[in-house]
Length: 99
Image (tube, rainbow, N blue to C red; front, side, top):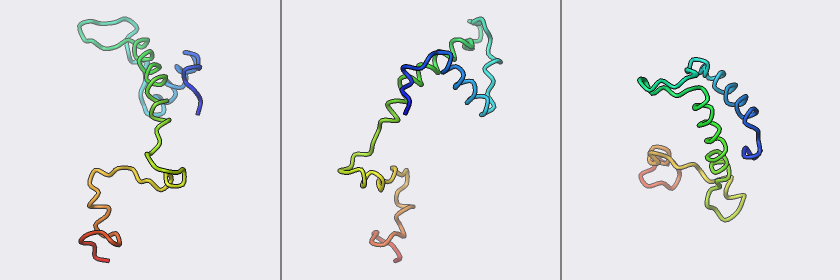
């Protein structure tokens, strides 16, 4: 993983604008001057906020590992499910399972 804290603002701006363009978002539609009547952020404010997000939140999320005893078990740990009964109802050994 690349540490985004050591990446220049220009490089992060290129990453941000490219990823947003691939998603169909054009930061060029944002004004260059703040408009207090609408509260729409400026391009510079939006880019600054996204750079801060990449430098602070993304490394924390990327470093997360499931709380297991070994790397092998981490590969088998399933992500939490909103409704686990749906996924486990027919699993062998599950209560009420049909197998």
